[in-house]
Image (cartoon, rainbow, N blue to C red; front, side, top):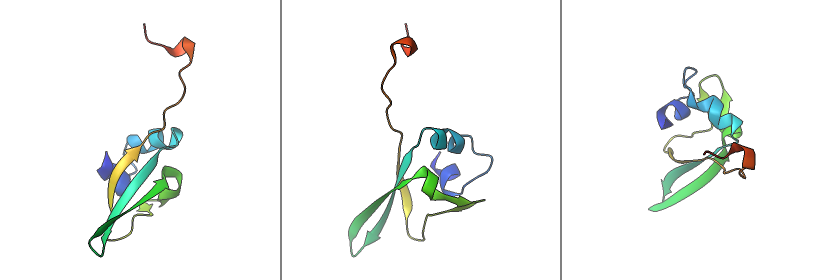
Length: 77
């Protein structure tokens, strides 16, 4: 999943779902022997066709999908 996200692959199935769910991603880099994390909304991560906010020397660490409150009508039986 991460590969399709960081390359902004137009055939990736996960990006539209993550956009609809208002997901965020955690980007990480190393600066002076310390890990530096930055959390970015998936809406801000995709800049244009096959372009992302991922800068050189950074990698995608985590995809965060927010939990929504359960609705009684949506419970599995």
